[in-house]
Length: 611
Image 1 (tube, one colour):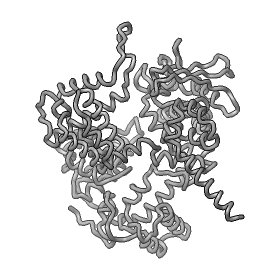
Image 2 (image 1 turned 90 degrees about the vertical axis):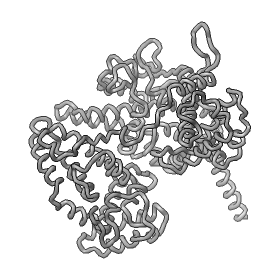
Image 3 (image 1 turned 180 degrees about the horizontal axis):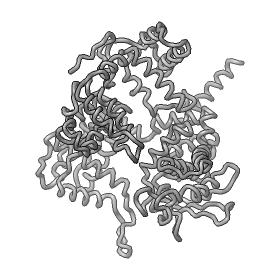
C-alpha cells in the first residue's frame, strides 16, 4: 500500500471519499482561513470559493468550525442530483457551487498534489495506457478502434488503483467490490465503467499480457449480491397461500376472480420471502424443510424475525434496509396469512400494536413523507417554484422544439443522442400536460395509455379544438375505480402539447407506427415505455431543464397541496380530481390545515396585543 499521508492527515481518505467523516481534523473554518490567505488565486476566484464555503454553513445551519473539511461532505450532503430550488436559482448554479467547494477542498487537503505524484509514476498502468493510446487515434466510428473518452476514464482510474497499490494484473472481482465500497456518487460510477472497459480491452490480443489474467466480470449482478433463491417447493407453497388470501369471488363464466388484489399479493410475497430468508439466516428454518407452516406457527421464531425486520432500519439498501413502515406492512401481511391458516395471531398482533418501531411505522404510513411535504411546502410558499411546476410542460416542450429547430436550420438529421433526448423531452412534456391539464394519474397508468383501437384509453379529437378524452377502466386503477376526464383546449397549451407530442415526437419512437400505446417502448415492439425508466428520465429533465427536482408522483402531491391551500372548502372536488377520498386527503394533507390553524392562533394573539 502506498503511503498517502500528507500535512492535513490521510489524503487517501479524501481520494477514496470514505463514507464516515473524521472524528477530528481540519474543519471548514480552517479551509476558509486557508483560502483567504492564498495568493495564487485572483480576488474574484478567492471570493467565489469563500462564498461557496460560507454557503455550506448556511445550508447546514452550523458554524464552519463544527463541519469537517472532507470531500465526503460534497458527495453525501451535496450530491450531483441534490439541487434544491429553495436555495439555488437553477441546477447550473448548484453544480457551480459544488465545483467551487470541491476545488477548494481538494487543494486544501493535498489531493491535487497527491494526484500529481500518482500521475507521474512509471509502472504497468503507464505501459497499459501507452499500448491503448494508438487504438484511440483517428475519427470516432471510423479509424479509432476504441473511444478516446474511454482512454480518459482509464487514466483517471489508474490514479485510484495506484493509490491502493494495485497494478492492472492485480485486479479481480473481489478487489473491484472492495473498491466499490470506498467511493460514492459520480466517482464510483466512473470506476464501475472503467472496470467494465478493462474487460472490453480483452478483444485486442496485443493487450492481453498487460490486462488481468481473467475477466473482472464487474456486472451489475456481480456488484449487488443476489438474494439466495428459495427452494421451488417453498415458492409453490407461498404462491398457493398468497393466491388464497388475495383472490376471491370466482366467476365460473369468465374463469376469473372478481377481486384480485395484485398489489397486496406483491407485498405478501415479499413479506414471506423476507421472512424465510431471515429464518434460514438465523437458524430458525432448515433449508430442506418441506412445510413452512410450523415456522409460521412458532411465536418465538416469529418474534425473532420481527425483531430482525425492525433492526434493518439501520442498514444500507445494499444490506437489506427496511423502513419501519415497510417492516410493519410485512408483519401485518404475515399475520393475515397466519389467521388464514388458523394460527393464533394474538402475539404478533401485540407486537404490531405495542412495539415502538411498529408504532413509528404506523405513523409514517398515515402521513406524507418529509421529502414530499418539503416539496409541497416549497410550491405553496414560493411563487417562482409554483410557476415552474404549473408550466413545466411548456418548458420541456420548448427545449425539445429548440433542438429540432437547431437541426432544421443546420439542414441535418438528429444524431442518435439528440433523438433520444428529444423523445424523452416530448414524452415528459406530454405526461406533464396530461397531469396538469387533465388529472394527476399514476405514472404506471399513464405509460399504459392506449391511443389506438376501439377501446383506446386516450382519444384524440379529429378537430384540433375538441377535448381529448381519457378513460381508464376500473380494473387497471389502484383504487379499482374508473378514471374519466376530458382535457380541454385553453390558453395555457396542455391540449396543444399533447397533440404536438403525438404528431411530432411520438413518430421518433422506433416502433410507434405499430404500437397501440401513447408512450411506446424504445426497444421492445408492441410494449409501452417502462414506467420506472420514464420516471428516472422525467426526474432528471425536471431538475436540469425546468429547475425543479421532482418525481412523477409529486405531480399528484403538488397539485393537491396547491388546491387545498387555496380552496380548503373544495375537498370533495379535489378528492375526485386525484381519484381518492376526502378522508385520505385529510389524513395525508392534514398538516396544511394544522399550519393554517397555528397561524390563525398567532393572528388572534396579535389582535389581543393591539387592544
